Image (cartoon, rainbow over all chains, first blue to last red; front, side, top):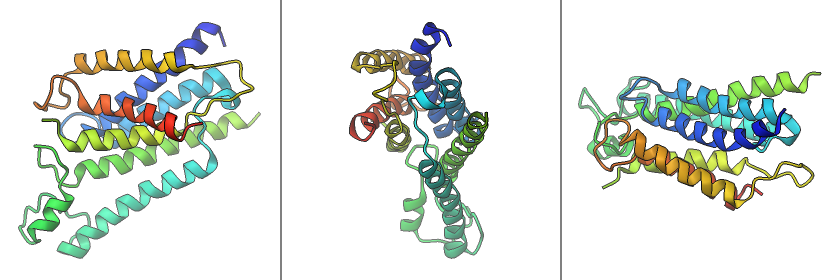
Amino acid sequence: MSTILKIFVFPAALLIMCLGVLIILGGHITPGGGFQGGAMIAGAFIFCAVVYGLKENPFKFSHDFLASMESIGALGFLILGLSGLFFSGFFLYNLGVDLNQIIPTFIQNFFNYSDPTNAGIIPYLNIVVGIKVLVGLSAVVIAFLEVK
Amino acid sequence: MVYIGPTLFGFILGFILGTRIKSDKESKIKFPISTYLVVLLVALFMAWQLGPFPYYTDSIIASGFLATIIGIIAGKVILGR
């Protein structure tokens, strides 16, 4: 790859990753969400992986990192779903909003995302989906680049 | 007042990504501190241009965006060696 690309891509990837995180965090009230933001972050990683190659890539996504992040994403989603089942009797019940008014206030406050939109657990679901997607798409590209 | 949600989780996600930035000593490609300073300044400008995304009224900049770049740099400095 050319020197210009090698100088430009890493700083650009950092900014694209920030935009991806912003898409994840705004997913409950704007277009976007966990999948789209995670795909943007993975896109920034892929940008670096294609330009620098896997060996010289500044972002070192190791096997352990990928496995742990994938697990955190899946378990986070499951825990949020089971919390709803445990406290309200409905899987993935939005404990932070509590539309049926069946759970105590302190549990509602605990699960409510702290911004004025009163979105409950939706941003948390976006975040864990984002983590899972960024790791999943990155793992696919790493697997392809390792095959010669 | 800045909302805690996007700022906190932006920082956490950025920190996770920042910890994975490792500089390879054998590599010819070097990104010194000046790179991160320039990125921080550009990110500040981008956050200002984005405005209080998404539809917040807490500040004049996208606080989640800025928290993420601070998290990336913090993750790189603390664990990404």
